[in-house]
Length: 588
Image (cartoon, rainbow, N blue to C red):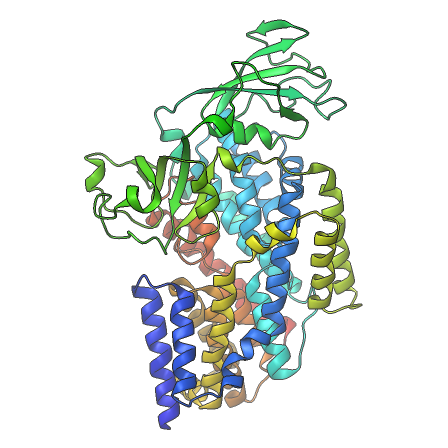
């Protein structure tokens, strides 16, 4: 083995170990590795920086803007409530979670889909007296599998497609992956529908376990000619709020108390809700009601110096492994921790002595500025407070959905490439003010884009130095290894990398290895590349392998073992199905 290949392999192993065992941010680790490869002469600057000009990376960046338009207009939320409906039993609720989540994730960012579904599912859990733990993990898994059906469903698909374009001059179509993805959705969906209830614990989430919260009176008015006029309280969904309840209605100067659920709403009704601060944010997301005029019952957010905020600790949080006291949380974040929940349970003992971990959910008392400051930073995965209650512009929801549909149709018909269609869609979102440019910038996750682009340098180094070919030789030490067995090895390696590091970095690292394996076997590289696409997305066994898994950790009250209990058999089932189908569609 040449010295350059040996240095490259040592670099790759070091990167993998650092990402898996340390708390350093992935973008810092991969940028450091890219810099080392340039300085050591393994790669030229042009070779190392090729990822920053890759069409797949650019497509991901533009699709962040498209997703921002869908979220800001409430389009995703509108679709979610329309499709979810009002189920009466757990099995019905599970079915209504699996189908919409998988379908929507095929055409938009699955992280956004899961974030918008979580509040709706928590409403169900509260109304139907169901444990959210039975619904939220299936939501994450369905969104992950659904994203494999189209080229834009996951960033991993776009990254690998970008590698195919730059390395092989091959570009996949929008629905090329559907031949494998749709069967995986059916197989995985049936498994989740039949076994999720049995394998998942009966456990309440973080919100349900908070014993008490400060209550506020929140007033809203029924909009003139709005969609709620003429509907009963129950039909409007106002009896199933998670964080509050309807106490009174003020109508034409009269106060109606203890109103029954069949009471019809009239234009101009003042609805008085009693609940935690989250109740105000929840109400602002309902289409057809507006903040009411001021009286003593109105929750005037601007006059409150403090508010309750719920924040989930992320992997880049500065005080991981330290106690609350050691982390100097109060001085660092200008916030006071009131309560900590871990795996759905409140932690007993002295608060200052609790050691902080990834996934811990903190109930904080802080200022309104906290949300604006930390919503888009990586210290916390989710930050939710009253200040996040800006109502979506529902009037533009059909327009945003029309832009998305047009993008999908144009690219599916081959009239434009995925990147060109995405650029037009992103521009349309900005031009029509579905999302302002200032907010669109905030939705760009630069750390993810840097991780993907920088990881291309590792892949390039493995190809140019022959390291990928050497790894392929090691994989093929078994004499007479059949192509399907080699395909299974590549798939398993990719799954292992995905569970340890980011899914996109795993795909980029495995791409040159997969191509080298195919070359040495003398068969087509396409089945192996497609296997990487599906394996890099099949992260079900840990909450850290995929962001949506970590998002439902706190709200579902899950423990790490819960992911293994349901995710391990699902990984085996999805893997076996994918490995069996891929050679039928893309022949060796």
